[in-house]
Image (cartoon, rainbow, N blue to C red):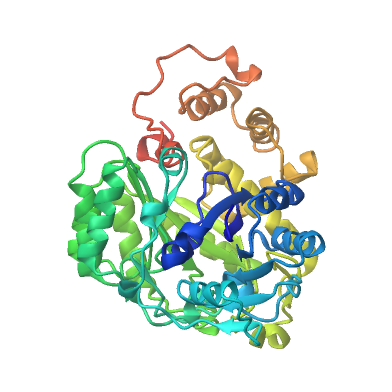
Amino acid sequence: MKDIILTTFNARYTHTAIGLRYLYANLSELQDRAHIIEFVINSSVADAVEVILAHQPKIIGIGAYIWNAQEVHELIEILKKVAPEIFIVLGGPEASYFPHRVDFSQADFIIQGEGDIAFYALSKQLLNGTIPSEKIIKAPIVELKNIALPYDYYDDHDIKHRYCYVEASRGCPFTCEFCLSSIDKKVREIPINIFLTILEKLWQRGVRNFKFIDRTFNLSIAYAIQILDFFLMKEGEYFVHFEVVPDHFPQELKDRIARFAPASLQLEVGIQTLDSQIAHNIHRRLNIPKIKENLLFLRDHTKAHLHVDLIVGLPGESIEGFGRNLNMLYDMSHCEIQIGILKKLSGTTLSRHDEIFGMVYSDKPPYDILQNDLIPFEQMQKMKRFARFWDLVYNSGNFKKTSLLLWKDGDVFSGFYAFSLWLYAQTESTWQISLDRLAGLLYRYLTTVLNEEPIMLKRFMIDDIMCERGRKLPAFLQENHQSKAPKENLLKLNKRQLKHTKENNEIG
């Protein structure tokens, strides 16, 4: 039996909730009375309630995020019906900012901000019989050097089967209006000697997949270099993910990035737009010459896997403008490009553009834009399908050679847009399209619409699909395939990233 249950719904089974572990680490003398239970979205919420109540808790702390807001609402609703005596404490970014567009009103307390210490203080009060009069608790910003860290609370199962998230810093100095991180402009770092000790301990326990959640990893170059040096001194297979700003790569940082083995390092590079006026509209810093210089260096002189992103629906940006951005970014990087749809999160200042640019958003998570003055609803729907198909065909790495045939004239946006319209007309869906079916549809489009030569096209598709060990070819390609030994360089940690390496990104 546990008096305190810490719980949330993760987006995937392979994910872990670092936030819950921070709360647990800072419970001090209450820690023995607490337990972490993680669920996955789309699982039965009633079953989750049953598991939680089996521990007979007095307090349930729940992490609310954009991806699990509906499940959290249902969890609170059921708990209050069957166990109304239990105190429900809600935290996380989806609970921290008003207005709440999902009903969390039945929660007993809501902690706004960083709850590492605030949750402990509240739990201590409640267990001692003191009930605060205020439902909303505004938690102060914490200094990472002054709180207990969560890394001892990844168990052996987490290490073997799931991502172990780490953070070296919190906060972001930039002011991008669509991002909640811009609210916390004070960047706080864990002292580097302490953080390197944490990394070494995780490494010794067997962690080989490190996903950093810092918003601006390369803000402090001296700090970043010491972390990169830690991994460069390690031998064997590992995978490290950092989120970086695109215009801050001094030479000493470039030199280290260039030393990483293929697909062992992934850099998520926030671009969002390459239009200076649009960037100005949303208070985003944009140095295009420096961005281009750095992306070309990363593309041509390193083996890092680049994951860059663009957003559809920004205030004042048309579809034609987005298309130019995509073409420019593809030319600069030839890498994985995540196409996102603008979301209006509570707490951000995006709403100031609503009247000027006719911005209309869904009130249901993830609060995607529905239309604006330049992109009507029907066109926005097409762009959402474009983004989904782009991820399935190009970003997945499953058709690295074949997809290049969709834009042989160099106009990436127009070529793929035409294909996405055709593909949706065939499927009337963007989900549950198997790899075999997608391969067949892509083959049919390229041969019947773009008049590609079938024999050559089948050779490209075979090379693409058989890039990953253990795959079985679709039936229409099997007659053209001569069995070869599978490539030995595909690592279990980073199959998707290795599909994007140069040898798999060129038509021979």
